[in-house]
Length: 511
Image (cartoon, rainbow, N blue to C red):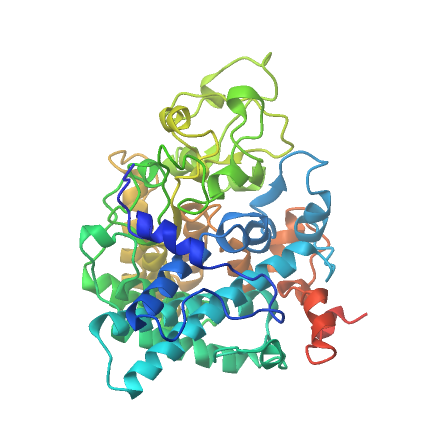
C-alpha cells in the first residue's frame, strides 16, 4: 500500500479542515475560510484539492446513497446486511417502492450539488484571473479538474433524476440557487462543454507524486460514458477509441489483482480516488473513505469488517461462464455460522479466509475485500481502500459496443477479445474467443461481458435502462415492482419543500 498518494499528503488532510461540504442544496453558504485577499493560487488549489476529498464522501461514492442508487436497483446486487438494518432502504431501492422522503435521496442530491457549488466557485476564481491576465499553468489544470468534477456530478444527477436545476455560477446567497429544473438535453450540453474543457486542459500523465490526479484520459473516458448513456454510438466510438489509441493504459494486471492493494493505480486504472491509512490516522475519512467499511463482511470479532451492504445476488453468480476467474474475484464467499465447515467453496483467495456472517445476501462484494495484515496494522474497516471510478476495460467495452452498433464487427470482436483474453489469462480452455459477426449475437456477448467484467461496479442498472431491457430483466429476477417510470428517482421532498414551489416533483411521482 502506497502512503505517498496524491491528495493524501499532510497538506491535503490539512486542506480538509478548511472546508465543510453542505448537504443542503438551497441552504448552502460559501465554503471555506479563504478570502479574496488571500493568495489566489492557495485559494484555487486549496479548493480543488478539497473536491477530491469531497468525492470520497459517504454520500457520493463510499456509502449507502451511492450504492443504493447505482447498484441495488440492478438484479445483480441488493442491500444485503441483515433484515433489520436499513429495511426501508431495501424496500425503496431493491423493491422499487419509491418515496420522495427517503433520506438517501437528499444525501446523494446534496453531495453532488455541494461539489458542483465548489467547482463553480473555483471556475469563477480562475475566470477572474483570466480577465486580469494573471493565469498560470496550474490555473489551466485546475480549470480542467473543476470542469471534470462538475460534469461528473451533473451526470450523476441527470441519470438518477432526469431534469434538475442547472447552476453554473457561484452562489453567494441561498436564493440564487432556488431555480427551476433544466431539461435533460441542456444538462448534457453543459456536461459536453465541461468535458471538452477538461480534455483540452488536463495533462495525459502525471509524475508519481501526483498519482491519482485527473488526466485527459479520465475526461475523455467519462465523456465516452456520457455518450453511452445517450446511445450516441458515433461520439461514444470516437471518445473510447481516442483513449485506446493513445496507448496510455493496458490490461496487463491480472483480474484477481486489480482490487487488491497491489492493484491500486495499475495500468488499467484511468481514475481512482486515493485513500490510505497512517499510524496517526488509522481510520479517518479525511485521508480515506468508508467504501470498504460499508461493504465489508458483517460479522463478529475478527469478522467484524463492516456493515455488509451492497451484496451480490445469486443472479450475479449465475452470470459467469464456467471457470471465469472474475467470479472468484468479485464474489466474497462466507459461512452462516462457526459450526459450518470450512470448504474450498467458501474459502476466499488471496487470503485463505472463510468469514462467518448472519447476512441475508448471497455474497459480499469482494471488490471491497481488505488485507488481513493491514487490518491488524490499522483497522478492520479498510479506510485505505482506493475507490476505482473509471477502468480501462470499461472503455474498451464501450468501444466494442459502439463499433458493433456502427456495423464494424471486426473491431468490436477485437475489443471484446482484449477484455476476455485478460480475464482468461494463460488458461486457454476457458472463455473462448467470440468470433461471430452477427450484430445481434455480438450485442448480447458484449452486454454479457460488461456485466461480468464490471460486476458490482455501479453501472449495471443504468446499462439495463439504456438498453431498454430493464423491465424484462428485473422482472425475471423477481423485482416485479419495477416499472419504466422507476428508471428515474423522485426528487427529494426536502428540496421541493425548501424551494417553496420553484422546484417541482418528477411527473410520475406527483401525489
